[in-house]
Image 1 (cartoon, helix red, strand yellow):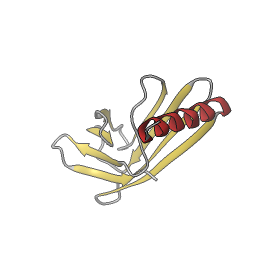
Image 2 (image 1 turned 180 degrees about the horizontal axis):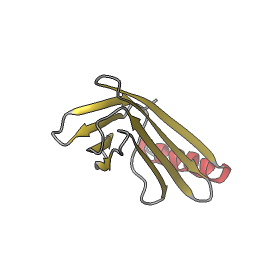
Image 3 (image 1 turned 30 degrees about the vertical axis):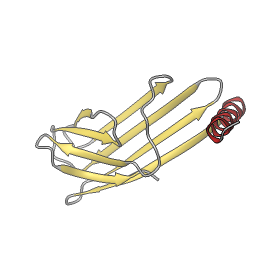
Length: 124
């Protein structure tokens, strides 16, 4: 048996054990930006009988009633608009197979309509 097959079988076994036993992983990032703007991101992946995930992104002290785009890693941008207080909050519950690919070390950015970053952080 060659090395690639052994690795593939090992990964499949580890995944099967993780799914059977159920596990959860949490990634978080503090977002820092220009001036007093700040935010937080949390991504929790739950592996059990069903694979699900929860994504929460929140920010404050941004310009009021303004559109932004949240980008996590290489995933498509998520459009958001701040409220009258200059805040926004995203809460998403996701199910496999439609889960984004989000990993430790992925950059998180909140970008203005001009494409300039206003908040940034790294998932840990």
